[in-house]
Length: 284
Image 1: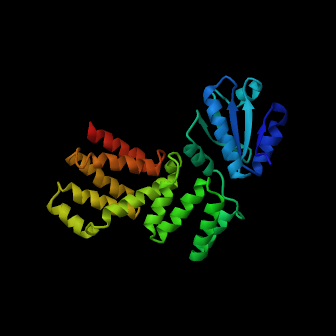
Image 2: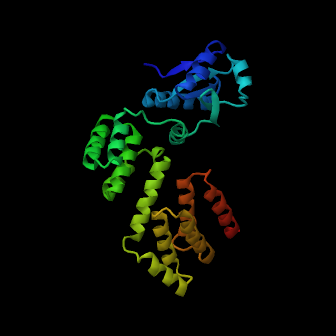
């Protein structure tokens, strides 16, 4: 079964607008002379097959379909637009890395309720832990090329405190798939766990910092504690203070730690813009 279709003015209404009320449609505006289009198209075709109908790929060759390109304000190629319920809900331009395209797609689809992966996730959420973990192992064997299986399996293992197993799964991802937002968050948690294993507790670290404001190690450990419990603003405050007090501490650990949190949260997150400005002011 094909999950992509060539689009013309004749079939656009039926295959994109009407079809998008049932399934998200990813519309790729491309051209034969466009080099980035040639690298992007195979990735989109691969993902369409991998997602197996969770979205459909609609391909519009702009030189043949100039009216459609004009109608949708396509100024450069490749331009990719997501259509849901007859409306354009998101878009990007250029040949993005596969991991970023997955992130783009995942914002607009949900795993099929009857898919093995979703069944395993649901079982885990309902407390059927051993059954869910066994199912994930089976899916991993059956779908070794599906990065979401590894990521979701690692997520479960993290919750079960099987940190080494989770780390091995995450490290087996491709370089692009390691940039998946969920994977980045899990890597961040593992780093924080490593940082606090032998560290004092939060209260002790706060007392140390009160007595020794320039103690960057205490601030770095405190940041890891905050990050581990999801208090990213507090974590970034400590890292920013490290940058202020000793920019070169531990091979620029303050700045590097901030950049990792920015990457994990995503560039559109409100905190990222706020703390990116604070970091720039501090560095300058």
